[in-house]
Image (cartoon, rainbow over all chains, first blue to last red; front, side, top):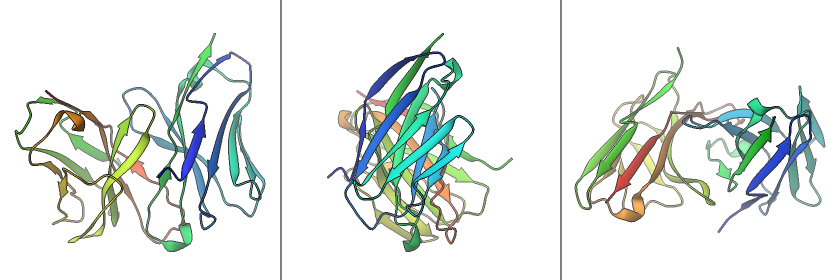
Length: 114
Length: 114
């Protein structure tokens, strides 16, 4: 079963626009929600992460919005640039369990057109 | 340089011919994991290990084996590969005890089974 559902599967945005990727989760025990960025030919790398005690976290042009009651979180990329073109994965884990296990969403391929 | 390495990066093989994909990390991480990445399915965990001689099944373990005889190495073994194991494989490691779940991924191994 897919515990983390991600949408859309693909996204095309003009340079300077806002990219928005959404994720929904089922397990209320999840308490750590990272986003990973993957460039072609590379492994995923941690981009930004949030814990459910805050509703928003911002790092530069990247913002995570978190809605605990709806069990949803999203990644916003402001002023999107061609260099942001990559595949993005949301994920969730039970951080307090200390097992290291992450559940990933299906991934979103973002293309930013110049 | 802290890194996770995988070999080979590309592999084409035939059905039934045993193969091993190696994974090594130089960060002294306890937790190591194998994922496969397929379009529309995201990253799915195959096997994981929480320390030397401690391994367990992930979400899609059928047809795979692993071993953890040394802390830094975590090879993935396909004893009788089949075409449905054609995929992109990633090894990852993370330190336990952080509660953050950040995983460090290798560069990937693209496997084709004909």
